[in-house]
Image (cartoon, rainbow, N blue to C red; front, side, top):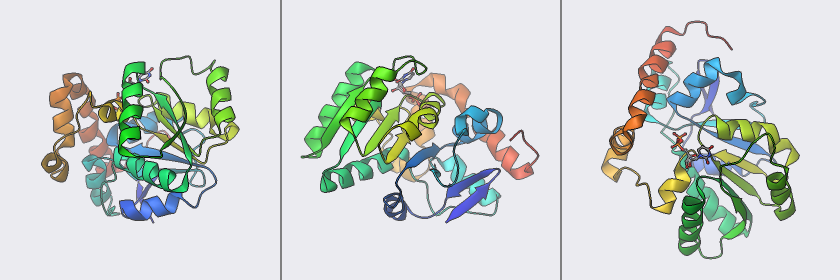
Length: 239
Ligand code: UDP
């Protein structure tokens, strides 16, 4: 069920199988494993601190990770985009009448994201929400709000590694079953930031679209060849 890439166990079945898989957990942290997250995690322990195979699962989010899995001779079945997992989770929460807490992004994007989801998924229960601009070391008010509202899922869209650190630090003291870091997904759902056209996603070119839209990302792309090289050489790294 998992492919080994460097020190990581990456979920290697289909997205549909993944959605069934996560429903069996009492508590789980879903990590969108793109090359940037995985590469940085090799050097910054705090990204994956506290993550174990028991309470966390990494999905191959990005064509770079799909290629890496082939280089590592442990191929994953397909790319599993975080934002698509998010939508599937929303769907089963609506069916099961379970609440979701939305944490992250700027207030305006967050509000619009929630509004769009409520329009698309009738009956969606929003347990609560908070923007992503706060001190994660001093956020008892937000943690209390999550405890009080008792969501089934907490979506955290504050970019990596901020969102992963937040989840690792607090998930065990919170009541929700599913925690997922979602990067800029609230911005995309708000409609203010477009996702790549379907054909680009199909050809593994979503990264190109994102760089064209947000040129500051070009620097971050440099991580992909470095990550692939690391996998090819499989040299020692600081674990
Ligand atoms: N963000 C946040 N708090 C912060 C910094 C960023 O909530 O302190 C939000 C930001 O508004 C945006 C998302 O986190 O919605 C950043 O997404 P990005 O695209 O950088 O993440 P990636 O998908 O690249 O991990």
